[in-house]
Length: 157
Image 1 (cartoon, rainbow, N blue to C red):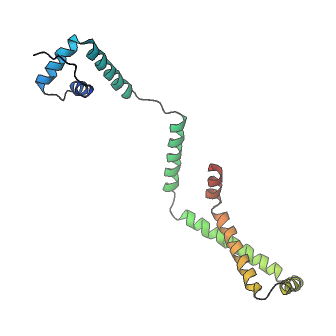
Image 2: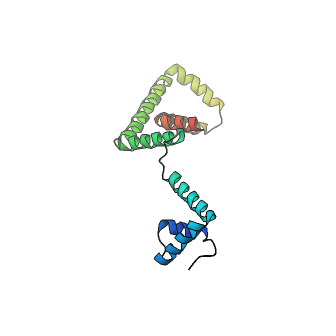
Image 3: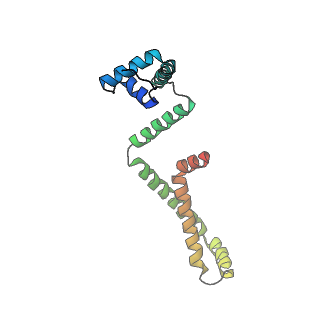
């Protein structure tokens, strides 16, 4: 029994993969020996398989991804408590700095000048000023603690 029509691409792929039943496999094989078009299609499919099975060397993008993966692995391999301790110590350092500034500002001459300035402000502004100062110190502490991540974020923009 001869095949009059060329098999479609899916059947050629199935023939090449060897998943057809033996009778169909033999029929397509006989057809391919006589049909130049099917021989060319089969040759193209074999070349595609050959190209897809070839190992490629990584390029600069792949190298960059591999380096980032290694860096992430190194960071996650570090001791889990080292970063929170670093943040805590930096916060303590800025609190100590704030206390030092407060001691310097607490001198009698400076206090009298600050009182003159505060008297110029509307009432109930003392609490607002102290809250703003404490928030600024807290933000400075956090910025210093997270400076590496912040700088990395700025560089990536």
